[in-house]
Image (cartoon, rainbow, N blue to C red):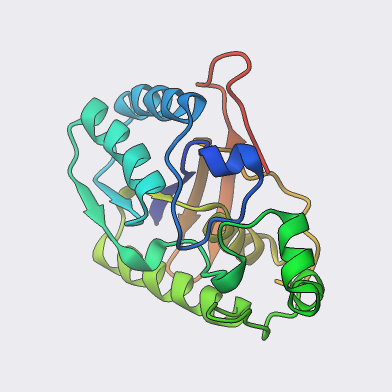
Length: 208
C-alpha cells in the first residue's frame, strides 16, 4: 500500500481574478503564500518519504514551503502540470466567450476529446497525469509521498477513486493547500480524506 498526500498549490493572483492558468503561471497571492507556509508546518509533523512537485511556479513555491519546514528535497516533475488550456490561458470566462465562443462552448460541454487551439484534450491530460503518478507509485512501494500539483490533477484521481466519469459535472471541492489523502493498493486508488484544510487559519480556506 502506497500512501499519497495530494496537494493543490496555494491561491494565486489569477485564482483571485478567476483567470485560466494551465501552463501559464501566476504568483501566489499573499493569502496563497500563507496557506503554503501553514501547509508546511502541518506536513512537518508527519512522516513521509518523498516530496514531488509540478514545475509550474505556483506549485513549486508551495512545495518549497513544505521542503523548508520538513527538510525534504523537492523532486520536480513537469508531467504534474495543470492541463494545457492553449489560447484560453490568461483569460477570464467572459474573455474566453468573447474571443473563442465556439471553442468555449465545446470546452464547457465536457467533451473529453476536444483540445482548444494550442491546448490539450481531457483525454491527453488524463493520460499524462495517470502515467506520471503510476511511475511515481512504482518508485515508492509501501511508502508515503507528498505530491504538490494542480486542481485538475487532483480531480483526475478523485474521479478514478470514486468511479466518476470525466465528463460528469464536478461536485467535489479543490481546496488550495488542502490535504487530500489517498492510498494505492497496487491496483486501485482509494480516498481516505479529501479537502482537509484544518491547518489553515480562519478566512484562509479557498476553493474552486
